[in-house]
Length: 216
Image (cartoon, helix red, strand yellow):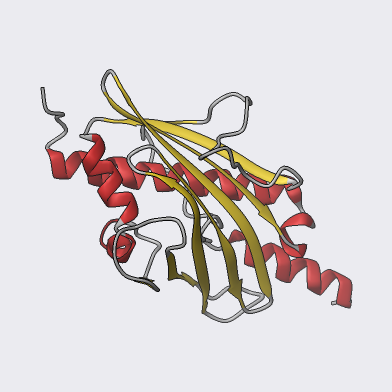
């Protein structure tokens, strides 16, 4: 196989694995019937005036309403060390600081990369740093996902709003990097699947813990 073709095949294989990253995310697609929607393009999400990477070619947005208390949804999302308990594609997560989840908090997490025709089984190591945060309202973090022959830099913004029926969770993310920039439509599709999958898992976990009912 010519070198250029081999490189393209390697890139495609790497992009198709479930990537979950701190602001760098691409998990499996959301389950059928999951109450997750892709909003129409609009103003970028922000947290304390900061949003995703305006220059990034790869970007996606998603949102869902979760029938659970805002405090429960926020706790699940910010207790990062417990992510493996409810996110199927997160195999490990560790806080790199202590105390309340806040601007400056950092955490390292991993996701497996199954064997494929281009690469052996490996894992992605993700290091995320919280840049902006407003309790029970929004989070913005950034960080790289690094694996064998792959690096993606991302920016991820989350928004949490009380609405009739529960909590509206919206998220937007951008990716940059040689591999994803080489095939923007495909990388965007994978990123969209990742956001939908994350929201579906968050919804399932939060509603299960709260019994699917918010306090009156």
